[in-house]
Length: 295
Image 1 (cartoon, rainbow, N blue to C red):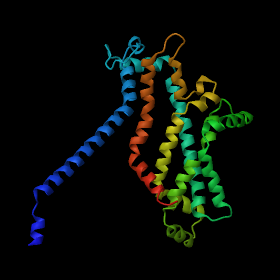
Image 2 (image 1 turned 90 degrees about the vertical axis):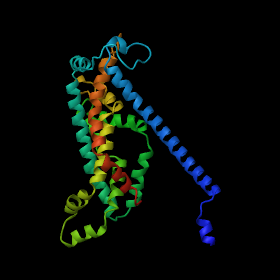
Image 3 (image 1 turned 30 degrees about the vertical axis):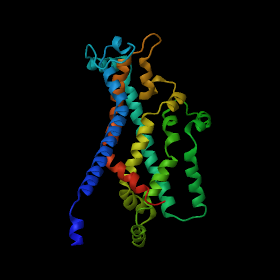
Image 4 (image 1 turned 180 degrees about the vertical axis):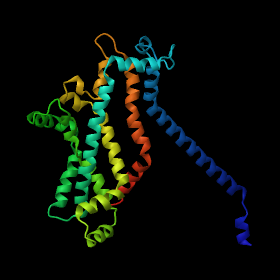
């Protein structure tokens, strides 16, 4: 009888349930409102860029922000941007430098990560700690010594100056090492018993299992090198070797800034990065999650 009485919903219990459901709904509404507001804040610069890319140069230089142009001319701005500067050449330079730096980062960082994850040798932990310590040093602290090294080697105004200093980094080594620790050691031990060498184990067993981490590192390295502005500005002087971020400064003259053409060219420059992020998003999330399982 007591169990039956407890099972019967009383008005007080029903009111408490409704209040709890109402608070949960309110919390969900507030959460979505905050997320939508944050998304709008992040998307606003892109909206501004697209709006400016559709305007004539006179409207693009007006004070204030007007979302819709009086005359839509995005196609004309794209054509004018390619006529005004050698944008195609700048894209080729950016693609070459970014691809070489990304491939070098993947190969060298994965080899170093394999060494830290699979081998035991004196001073390994100390060396890995030194690698991690370099993560705390901002790039602008070492930019002057790095420039001196490049100048001493005679690499100024060369493609090597753009990608050699970034062929391997501490973050890539850390990411690959953390992911390789999640791979069962039984796989590599079985390969050694079968007579496989270390390079065969690394290239045929470990690396195919590290695809999520490799794609994650590819995204980070690609975005960093594609968007880099400060370092190319320091080491490149010939306009024929400019990358896209440097080339976009050509749209600003002494008396007039062609913001509409610059925003149109910037939209084109965003396409490779957007394609990289959205194309590998699923592997990127998996790589970040898996690399943090073991420390």
